[in-house]
Amino acid sequence: MQLTSVVTPFTNENLTMLSQIGVTHVTIRYPGPGRDKLEAVRDQVEACGLKIAAIEGYLPIENIKLGNDRAEAELEEMKTLLRDMQAVGIPFVCYNFMAGTDWVRTQLDARERGGALVTGFDVAQAEQAVSLSETTRETEASPIGAEELWTNLERFLRELVPVAEECGVTLAMHPDDPPLETFMGKARIMNCVANFERLVQLVPSPANAICFCQGTFAEMGVDIPATIRRLGPHIKYVHFRDIKGTRERFVETFHDNGPTDMFAAVQAYQEIGFTGPIRPDHVPQLVGEEGGEPGYTMLGRLHAFGYLQGLIEAAGKGGNG
Image 1 (cartoon, rainbow, N blue to C red):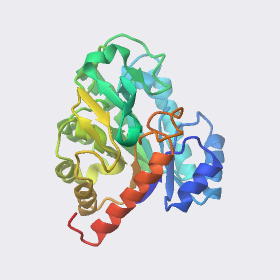
Image 2: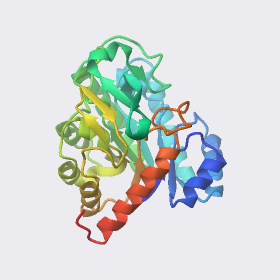
Image 3: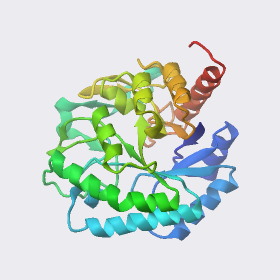
């Protein structure tokens, strides 16, 4: 497995620190059109001893999800991005199909162990939900149904999967977070295991794959190790995290402080032969980082990597948890 990290803020100091603790890859947000932008980020990352595993976040796909008259331009921009990724050497793009929003929370300062700050969600407070994405804040407010979303998703895949195949890039779908039936008047479709099985059958291809976000699948209430085995070879990218609660009401946890058997999850990844990027996701904000980006500060990420490295080593040696 490729130990992979977000980097916030994206500085040489943080890149070097990740390299020092054994991380080998990073994920970046889409910097906007232009291969030169990707090349500049790649050069910065490689100068610090790392490689770029994936692009996720800020992707030009919000109008594709909605199926409006700006969708065609975004499809063309995405095709150009895939070709640029091939040229620069970035093998994965992680995306989601939440229309009109991204991952949302109703609380950004819930308390975890020792008073560390984590995010939480309560559907009863949905009207005050915070969308934690810059790219969805100006999208149209009109409702959209599930079948229309499926139609738009199939168009997206039929247009992009052949280009992704040509470029050696994998499209990895992230689940809806939280995985509700509807949110703010818009349906959600990547909200259950069966729908991920439908996803990979829409356009069958190794380039049409799954980002297995453990926390979001935990919000669905599924058995995480069993679901890893069920989705098996379609899992090409992993977000490693945990939550306490249900899809309607939950809080994030430290990676070692949630209800999921994380060791069994790592064993399951090894059983299915997963060797792709795995990154700790949504870490608690530790003391001194209260003003950072919720879920994406650095100190909690260091703890998460140490924990993950220990799990991987133990599972590889046949440990029993």
